[in-house]
Length: 106
Image (cartoon, rainbow, N blue to C red; front, side, top):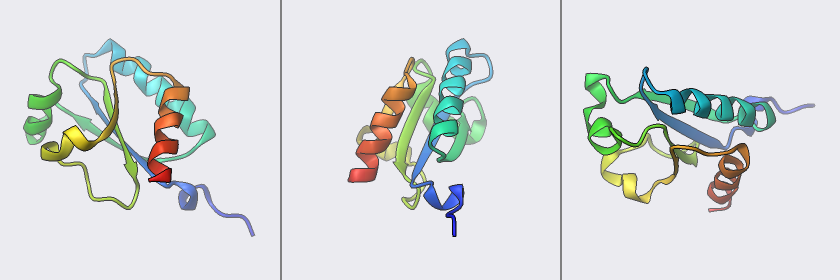
């Protein structure tokens, strides 16, 4: 019997972005490449959305940002952002997978 990809998704990546962000388009492409090799739970947060004001206050000038956590962990909390495993601005598939490895080992 073969395990489904969903069962193998031990990481969650939360992608903080905004619509008018060229670097975010590149970051989305990197995440797509990572997904093709190693599926993960994905959540996208548009920091311009009024519901995301706390995230905008943190990352207004830093998007794209990704937080990488174990999929079973609670949702991201802006108050705990300093403890997050994250990458900002420009990152590669190797960097993302390296952080995923780190999270999975913890």
